[in-house]
Image (cartoon, rainbow, N blue to C red; front, side):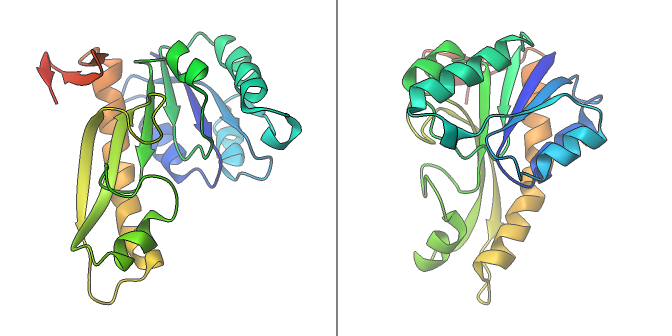
Length: 201
């Protein structure tokens, strides 16, 4: 299945997807970043994947940015759009256009800790476990139907950095598996619910 991946940073999840692309039946058509300095762009270049930078600071509105982003995406006619550390809030118009085709990874056990700084917030809240969620993207920030989660135990001496490292290991394992379910046609979004093998998740 043709896919486009959106990133904003180092692209470690992007790398895990690139490394597993053949096994998970994913043909990565392009990588798009809203930040020119994102290291993930180099990962794409090293893998000979077309890449684009769309600097959000050069747009006066979110709508204008999303419209341009949509034009780039549509050049590739992807069956799946993967948000792998894409740090932009998308407009309702954009999310509606690609509803059911767009997956996001978020470093918390949603619905806990939407938004940023999830690891420190989990520590501050005294959580005993933390983790990662993968969900369909809707117009609700980090609020789309959850597809899968992976848990890690919070240790007494954890810092945000040490906790994030362990969560990242789980991210790299879980995201390719979920993408594979989608590319196989086993995973879909129906009536705002995630459906896997005809079962509601």
